[in-house]
Amino acid sequence: MSSEVGLQQMLEVAVSAAREAGALQKQRLWGDFTFSFKGEVDIVTEVDRACEEMIVNRIRSAFPGHSFLAEENLYADGDPTWRWIIDPLDGTTNYAHGFPWFCVSIALEREGELTLGVIYHCMMDELFTTTLGRGAFLNGAPIRVSSRAPLRQSLIATGFPYDAARGNENNFRNFFELQLAARGVRRAGAAALDLAYVAAGRLDGYWECKLKPWDVAAGALLVREAGGTVTNHMGEPHRIDDHRILATNGLIHDEIESLLERAGKAEPVL
Ligand code: IPD
Ligand code: CA
Ligand code: CA
Ligand code: CA
Image (tube, rainbow, N blue to C red; front, side):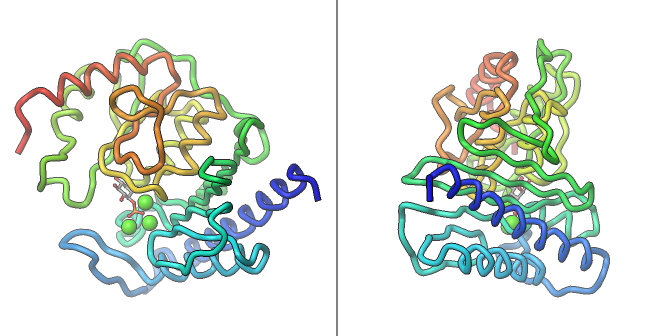
C-alpha cells in the first residue's frame, strides 16, 4: 500500500469517526446528560467521554497499534510513529448549556509532524479536512484564508481558559487592546472552530493563550494548508505543545503580534 493510499484511508476513517461522534452530540444536545467537574469551572459531560470512546475505538479497529493523545483519557501508548490527537468535543461549556457551538477535532501526526486534520461542526453539518501538502477543504470544496487587512477592518477571535481569572496568564489585557484595534473580536468558545473559521476566511485571525495540543492540532494544519500563518505569540513557528497560538491570514499577523507584545508588557488586568 503506497503512503498516499494509506493517508487517504486514514482520512476516511477520521472523517467517519468525526461524523459518528458529531451525530451523537447532535442527538443528545438539549437532552439530559450528566457532567462532572475537572476544576471549579471546568466541566466534562458524559457525551465528551462517550464521543472519545467512539472515536478511539473506531480508529483503533482500523489501525491497531497507533498511539493516541486524547483529552479525556490516557491510552496505553502504541507505535509512536503514528499519533492521533483528539478533542472529542471542543466547546464543552457551550454544549452543557445548550449553546450550539462545538465540534469534534481529530488530527494525526506522523513522526511528530501533523499530516491530517478533521474538524466536524455537526450543527452546521460542516466538515473541515486537510492533509499535509494537499490543501484545506470544507465539505469537499477548497478553502483559503481571507485577504482582508489591515486589522482595523478585520474580524478576529479569541478564547479564555477555564481558570481565566487566576494565575499570571490571563487574556483580558490582550482582549482590551485587540478589541480597540480590530473591527471586532468574537469569543465563541470552541478553539478548533475558531481555527477552522480562520482557514475558511470567515475570521481573519485568532489568538489564545492557554491551549492544549488537542485544541489546536487539526486547526493549525488546516490554517497552514489554507494559506495562513500559524505561530506562537513571538512569531516563532507554532508547535502543538505551545500554549499560545496566533493564526491569521498572514496579512494581519505582524499587527496582532505587536499588540500582543505591547499588552504583555502592560499592567496585568485582575
Ligand atoms: C476549550 C475550548 C475553548 C477554549 C478553552 C478550551 P474544551 O476546550 O476550546 O474555546 O477557550 O481554552 O479548553 O474543554 O471545551 O474542549
Ligand atoms: Ca475540556
Ligand atoms: Ca478543547
Ligand atoms: Ca474537549
